[in-house]
Length: 356
Image 1 (spheres, rainbow, N blue to C red):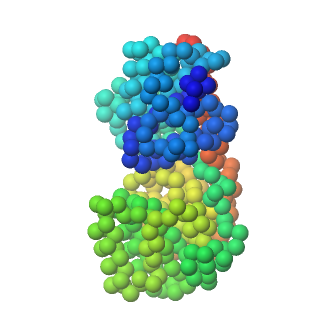
Image 2: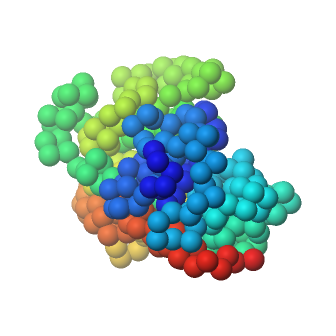
Image 3: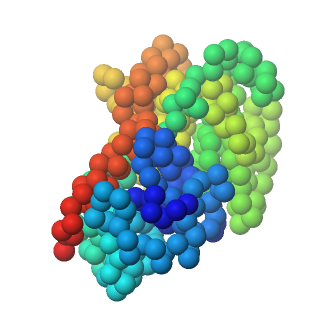
């Protein structure tokens, strides 16, 4: 990419795939489609994204056409610090934006870096609470064209080699204790024997350090005689198809930074049971316009009770799923996220007077 044609730089200085990297991969094409002149910088990103090279940084002393400065949008400490060096030491015309997804008190070093940003975005109200400065809350969005209810659920189940007539409850994501996979398995071992029309599906990968954890869960399921009804299906790139065959989704995490899975399920017209971690309580609607049930993290009784409520009351479950699709379409599209971020860019780069 020609740096002269770029208004926004999205650095990614971590090779390993993470939630932050995934956010960049999903957002940048949408931002460009909406007219934002943005490029990425760093390793670990698809070649399909518009890239700047390290040598292009020497050209950043010249501001972009029509603006006094470019935006450097950091999402980690290792991206905030180079932005500060470029702006404050090398005197490049940059405005620094940082997105915080952390749900804990920051270290002194991180606090210092954040104080030097021109603008800060928080991914949830809970995240904003841990900051010592004002921020703009912009929650993540998803692609509601990709995550949508199956047009023919029976055909979709056949394609995935799942029983067409069963009711299916799913738990998707990395298989590990933090994600509460064991809580889901324990809940299903208790709930399924007296609900013969239900099966459970666990989709996701166990990384090397969690393989033993997954093996223990499979052994527990086998001892309960439920290996044909609690299915470990591994990781899939077409995870949207798996959401489309569900009747209920469970997000049993013990901890989460934000968590997109409830949004993906709701967009697929699936009712949700989620724990009160990450942004889940800000995503799932309870009350008159219910899209799901939120329960305390780590409490098996609450998790089982919420699952049983939806499993045993199909009218409530189906209505919650339908409202969930409407809720996500109105509040949590990725286009809406990109537009809100763009407004922050325009605010910080539209003036030549940088905030202290």
